[in-house]
Length: 398
Image 1 (cartoon, rainbow, N blue to C red):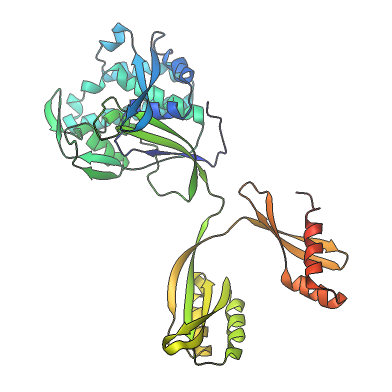
Image 2 (cartoon, rainbow, N blue to C red):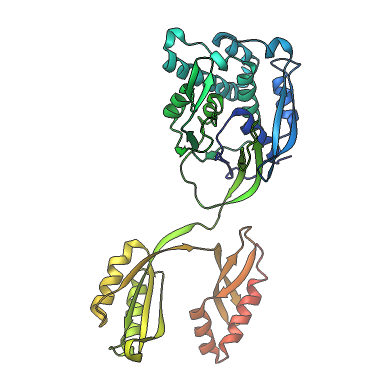
């Protein structure tokens, strides 16, 4: 059973093996959606509809496979568009749920019309109970999980052919082609096992609310794996879905500016460091190095954002003897932190708190300048002020 987690979390589907309605449902069931959630909704269509899940292997991976059961009057029927829409009417009272069912079915009908022309648009292979099962089952799972965002990879675009009622067609069926084009699903070429329908029209239609853009740095909380009906040798016909938690520590795009200096008085360097910090550089440091001909030298390094990059370069150019700088773009992960001010017996000290992802304190860092000034004022060792500030910080409730 999956408990609803932080609403900032989201789902991510990896559709490396394609997509079909039953694979999406199987992955969500494997993630933890109870079968009872699906059964309760499907019985509104017909009380004899049921389903089961079995564990299978696809390649080396253990996955869930969904096995639906339909009464003969449904499994042997071919439905018209009107009849398909009538099968979802029992859900009209749940407006958001029904809207997803209706719009998904409408998308399929519209794209069938683009293939055959509106006058000749009939469901063909899609006029089976499987289509309704996939749509109702998928949205039942999504509603149960309650996540507001669903992200996804692209899907494979096979190069071969398959046979349908109309004869031989592309392994990417015409209806699916128009669905992908309409909702903007990214595609990647696939030539292996070309004569196989990796992406069914119903499966593709269920991607209409998916987000295919990149997401911010996140962590996998839990995953589920759904199996396709076919089992290939040396190929895992399966997809995955993961609950993703956005990282609280976001990466910053910063720059480092480095330069080596071996022909300048070291007395100038502290002045340069002060100037780059005054204009808003994140950090500056120096490293003792050996340059060509075994000359001792100093490497000045500055960490800054793009907004002050030109100013940093200008200061180094004007204030030092260097003939050039090296510029690199870096990612910085800034850990969670907070700041408090504590009262010690010697005076007030600001303290930075290093926090875990769960906002518990994992480090205390008293401000050096505050501690230095108090140590001078009271003529006591600097470490005494540091220790006193940390001890008082630990008493502050959070």
